[in-house]
Length: 254
Image (tube, rainbow, N blue to C red; front, side, top):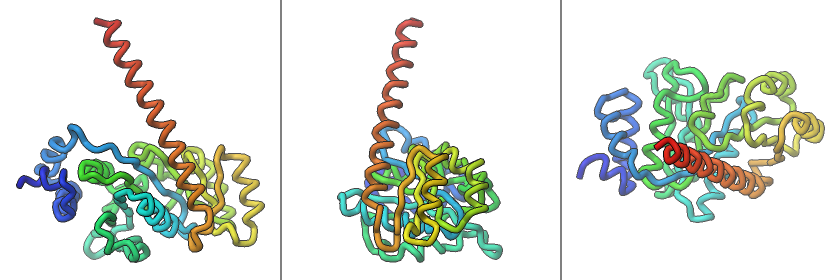
């Protein structure tokens, strides 16, 4: 069976092989990706971004558990800094999500930036397309978490969640000029820490939707899942409206 066909039936080894081809910029990968593009399964692509230390990986792990309880097939693309020796991902996020690694309906892939800027690896967007073609219902993309210029996730994810934490004062001020302005949902994680109430008030002045979580305990995660679902519905509605508008323009033009 051809690699594209094996991807379409959800073969994990084929998915991994395909993503490796894309990471290595192998022409075969690009050719196969074109075969996968037509009729791909629609997946909810959710970006998780924010500064180091805010608990992004813990939030992602809790979201994986929540979506699995709903019976969904989940893919995770965790973008890591590149190893100075091998150029590969350091796998920190995969270690933190260890509890999900034995679940056949969860695929976790650490992707090295390899010098790519913007918070993603150069092949992240294409890897998300591969996971969608393989039948994954939800794709969580965790950005590297290094600063306020991580806005590439907007080009890949329908919903962007920025994770912050109390006590990151200067970082939050910086994020207001970057991540917080592009995030659809802001999560104040570690919401049981001192300063959480003040941080919530501060963030509420900037962001339309701010949720408090204590990800290590699962607190606030159901509310986050509900908020993501609501935003996804709005995104689909808007996309359908744009599609209808383009269709009408073509009819009028003809």
